[in-house]
Length: 152
Image 1 (spheres, rainbow, N blue to C red):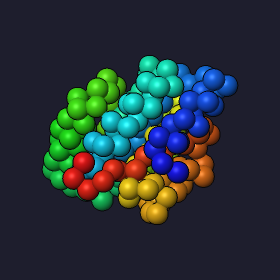
Image 2: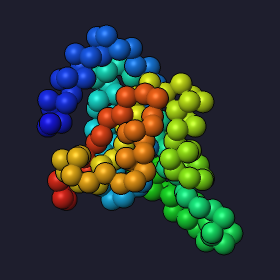
Image 3: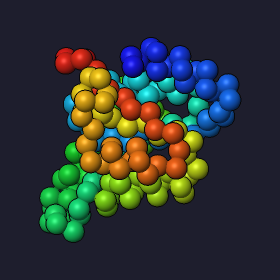
Image 4: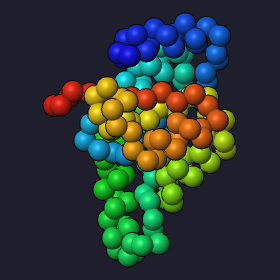
């Protein structure tokens, strides 16, 4: 299903659903900027004013303190750049198992809609293990965002 058709379907659903809070869970890969842009656009179309971007640093127990601090600094720089580029006002970095952290965040913050990156243009050809778990376990609707065409 193309992005435009997907958007129209959700716009019709949005007349029934009342989305207030959304979460964009990202892996900060280079095409995340395209996906973040799509998440912002869809959120605006659905009337969502509270959109948060979340990146999870996994497995801190396996990282040295210096390596973890460097990873955290790089992730913060990249996430703040992504948020600025896409006009996302709220963003944060958490640590732990990505599946658990995202699901806990959804429950603790009453998230109505979850946006996640797929690993390819179509959104369904390849979904990572975290994305697959979130699609199957999230207590809210999940919107898969394709990364976009190469170079975007």
